[in-house]
Length: 410
Image 1: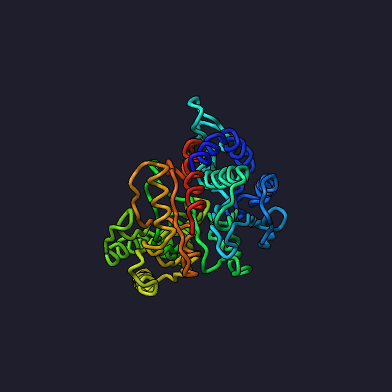
Image 2: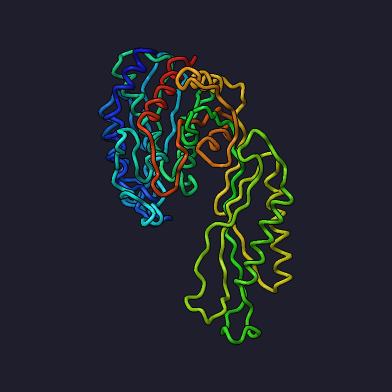
C-alpha cells in the first residue's frame, strides 16, 4: 500500500490535466439548457483507452435533445483474481449550469489553478469531476504497478445524475442488470466533508414536485372578473411548506440535517406585464423525507393540502412528481462499509462517521437492488455554487481510499 500510495501522489499533474480537459467541455443536460455529455464522454473514453482495462463499452440512452442524440454511459472493467466479484466505482459526467456568471471570479468553464498550486476552480471540478479524476488516478496507479488485484475493478462514468438519472444509472440498470452482481460492492464519491470522515450509508427519500395553479386571467384594474392564480399559488406554497414541516417532524440523528425538509425552489414565469392578473401560476418544491415515513403518507398529505387550497381559492391545482428516489439504507455492518471506514482511518487519519444525508446519489438506485453502496469523499462540499472549487490533494487522497478498498476487498 505504501508503494501504491506513493505512486498516486505522483499523479498530481495527471489529475490537473483531467480536470482541465473536463471543465472546458460543459456537460450540462438539455433540460437545463445544455447539450449533454457527449463531448466530455469522448475525451474520457480516450483517457480510459490509454489505461489497461480489459473491456470498455457503452450503454448509451437515446435523447434527441442532446448532442449526437444520445446520453452516453461508459463502462470499463479490469479483471482481478476473483472474477465473480467486482468493486464498482460510480461517477457522473454531467454538471449543473454555472448560474449567474457575475458571481464567478473566474470563467466557470475554464479551469483556474489557485496560487497555492492545489485549489482549482470551475463548474464541476468537485461535483463530480473530483470523483472521475480520483477513479482514473487510482486505476492508472494500480495498472502501472502490475500488482494482481483480488477482485475485478469496474468504473461507470454516467450521464444525467443532476436531472434525475433517467438516462444514466436507471437506464444502465434496466439495460444491463447483469452488471450489478450480488457479490459486488459499490463506491460513489459524490458527497463528503473536508476531513473525509463522513461515510454515507442512507439517503432521504427525494420528491421533486411541480404545482400548476389554474385561475382566471383578467385586467389588473378589474380583479373581480378573474381569479388570481399567483395569489392562490402563494397561499398554497406557504400551506405546503408549513403543513409538511409540521406533520413530518421526526428527527433522526443518522442524518444531517436530522429532519425532513420541504423547500419551494423554482418558479416559472407567468404574465409578461404588470397590469395583468395571471390565470396560471407554476412553482416547484424539493422535498427530502426521512425514510422512516412511508412515501404514500407523504403523497396523501400533499393531496389533502392541495384539495383544501382548491376549495378555499376556487382554483384548479395540478401537481406532478417530476422525480422521486426512494431507497433503502446500506447495512452499517456490510463489508464495504467496514472497509471504507478502515480506509478513512488509514488514509485521512481521522475517525470515520457513518451517517445519512439529504442529497441524492447513484447509491439510492444501487441500494434498491439490495446491494451495498457507500458514499464518501474528501470534499470542500461546495457543489452548485459560484466559484465551485476542488483540491488536487483531496483528489489524490480519495484515490488512495479507493486503492485501499480495492486491495483489501475479499
